[in-house]
Length: 76
Image (cartoon, rainbow, N blue to C red; front, side, top):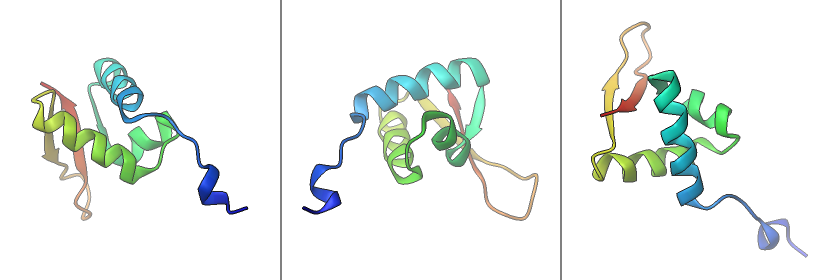
């Protein structure tokens, strides 16, 4: 059988709960940092954060510490 057929992962709601609790403790993190802490793929984290942003739970800003455009998220 194909590996993609039996993919199992966390639901988006569980990931959003994890993100909320992590951001409550750490204040502000990037998508990459959040994906490492939760053990999820960055695209899934980005989707969860965009949902949380549309609900008014998180704020986004761009970091200016380096030349790359880093997206940082924190709770409202």
